[in-house]
Amino acid sequence: MKIVFMGTPEFSVPVLDALRQAHEIVAVYCQPPRPAGRGKAERPSPVQARAEALGLPVRHPVSLRSEGAAKDFAALGADIAVVVAYGLILPQAVLDAPRFGCLNIHASLLPRWRGAAPIHRAIMAGDAETGVCIMQMEVGLDTGPVLLREAVAIEAEETTAELHDRLSALGARLIVEALARLPDLKPEPQPAQGVTYAAKIDKAEARVDFVRPAVEVDRLIRGLSPFPGAWTEVNGERVKLLRSRLVAGGGQPGQVLRGFTIACGEGAVEILEAQREGKRPMPAGEVLKGLTLPERLA
Image (cartoon, rainbow, N blue to C red; front, top):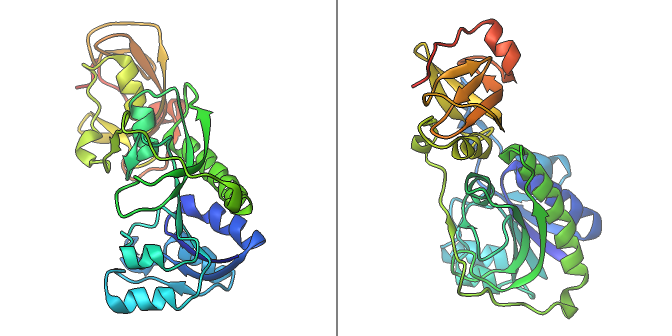
């Protein structure tokens, strides 16, 4: 099939690789390069970098709402568009242009966690499972009928980074299967019950409140790892907490019990990995070689 691929972050790259092996990619759409690093030089997105390495034509319009952008898209003569974490809203003219429409790879079990941050929110909410849906796109936010879905369990100590990689690989496999079975797949409308929205992560959510139960603190730490990273203040320094687990113990909220084990409102969490300002992520034991914890964290 002749495919337009639309994606931007690292999550989308395995999907692009899988599709290229099985189909013809007539164009790759992604977000424009953004300033990054100390010099604020423009840096292409992971999808753009990969597409250019593969010799694929790349487009990065700032919007698809203009008549010209829609005409340019339609002129590609694609059979189908595959969209995964692209970052722009597709107007109706674009959705209608490919012969078989547009399919979206969404990292949740729709209708749960529609929206921008489904992986983070699933871990932060303590969901037992999540998964990937292959969905026919509509103008609404992740409202379209689902062609294929597959669930996976969320492991007890899994971080967003780890779950991200598993779901990216799963999405790549499912979209290839969906395209191979496309004529036989029956779209299933999403149920009206069980709809939740995965709002974009606000950095204001990232400060750890040890008054909360340990189970919630643990979910926050794992759900925001690696970005933006849950954090606490240690001797005036902001320290990111990147990996944790629930452990036995108790005390006043924020009390340091032993090593990097912290009492919470209920129970305790052990910090397994952290990152000091200006440093790389390190195991907790390494962090504590150069950082003395107070008796209690705020």
